[in-house]
Every structure is written in structure tokens, then in C-alpha cells.
Amino acid sequence: QVQLVESGGGLVQAGGSLRLSCAASGIFVSINDMGWYRRPPGKQRELVATMTSDGGPNYADSVKGRFTISRDNAKNMVYLQMNSLKPEDTATYYCYGKIRRTKWTGWSDYWGQGTQVTVSS
Image (cartoon, rainbow, N blue to C red; front, side):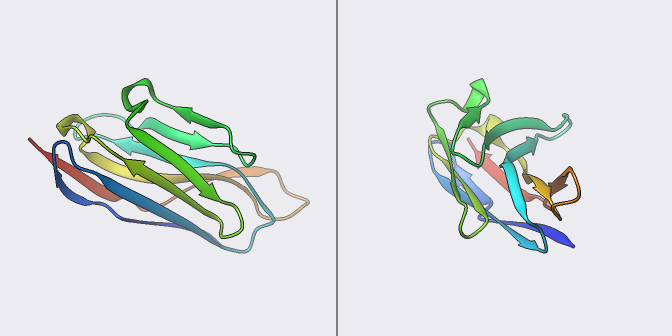
């Protein structure tokens, strides 16, 4: 069983900062991409930022220059530092990982339960 568990969401005023963390646990042999998606109220889930296992980041245009993704591969963790938050960043944020459970299986997508981020104006 593979689990992704997020932490760090909350309520913040516009212009403030939050840091999200996600830990992958369970039995697996490798993590490829790891990152964050979000679902704003009434909208579909969208990419926020992902990072490959060798550190290559990919950001949504809407968060470039404000959010920073990082990983600790030794701890199987991914982080999202969110600065200059805007009300439109309000969403449920989901941790994502492309994970291989055994050396004989392919890559599968795993998702966390989500953590709420609310930015007040």
C-alpha cells in the first residue's frame, strides 16, 4: 500500500505565505515525478508544480515566480513554498506521485487526500 499524506494547509491573508509538505510511505521501489495539483472551488483539478526525480521543476504559469517546489528524495518528500498568495490560489491542494511499487511493475499515479488552502482578500 502506498500513501501520500499532505500537511501545511490553512487560512492566510492575501500576500502571505504557506508551506505544504507531502510524505510518501508504504512499499515501493522508486518515485519518478512528484508534485502538486489543486482544485479551486467549482473548477477542475489543475497542475500547480511537479518535479522529476533529478530535480527538474515544472510550474503552472499562474504560480511562476511565487511558488517553489522542492524534493527530498532520501525522505520521499515533496514541498511547496507558496509566497505572495492571492485569493485565486484558494483550492484543495493534492500531492501527486508517479510511483513504481516493485521492479516488475510499471509506474502508477498516486494521490493524497488533499489539504485546503484558503486565501482571504
